[in-house]
Length: 343
Ligand code: KG4
Ligand code: ZN
Image (cartoon, rainbow, N blue to C red):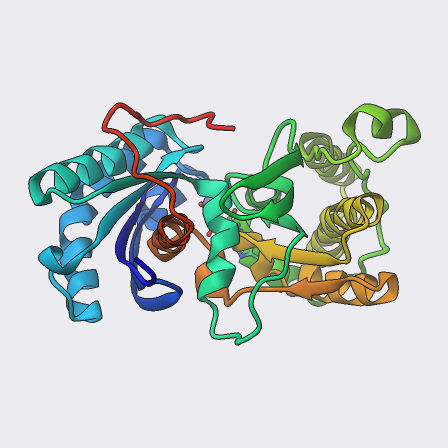
């Protein structure tokens, strides 16, 4: 089957994503987010996310089918994110996918969410195909991962990831410290526009020579968050007004610096002059600008899929399954379950 028609289900975090692809052609991509429901808690609440998926799945599937102008019977396969992610949230998608596959008697593909993020690039309108090998940097509210991709379907190596908070999570937590609403990324971005990124030198996690031996490609953002909290506390204790723009700009600079430095170090160490970006934090203008600037200086070409394919979505899951089918990979058995820590 060269161009299989695949429906993909993504429920690993707070987005219920249903995508339909025909091979590498994107037919529809509906995303229902429960973000507003999490806003008052300042972060994603797993139980709330799982319940929201349950409510959103059926209407989202119907909408995706209608937009793609296909029926369930037309599908060649069903694909679903089996991990990593929030266990309860994943379980809703996996249950729905198994139900669909069994009732329709269609093959089912369980796929890895992180590899799905890379597959998103295949669906971009860009006529140039993704070149291998490539280093991939995935940054979202749930993950901060550096991957060495030699082949999307057979050879993806996890080089490193965050040892504590994800980058997006750090944006969300620091926004809260500054009294800005959730999700914090866009808010910090806005606040930072008038700030001086060099005003305060915040720590770059796992970047000291002593850390680099063991954690060369790993990230840590909780120390940075604590440093921002201490800085704000001290200013307030001294009766000073907190310079929100400068704190936001300096914090953002610390995150961007460490992300770009480690991603380009991986490119250099591995002799791979290509870098693919993915995840919701890529919406950050400063991150994109600094990456492009420093990558160019290092002779590394950067690929950034369209933003709507960078954040969590079902199309990337369907796209990855279509790629697996095209490469001759057999379907999953029904024995798999949701695996929150899938490597
Ligand atoms: O990939 P994504 O949409 O979803 C999940 O993580 O599930 O990423 C969401 C994260 C949030 O933490 C949000 O604060 C962050 O991406 N984000 C940003 C920006 N826009 C969204 N972070 C920094 N700058 C932005 N402009
Ligand atoms: Zn994701």
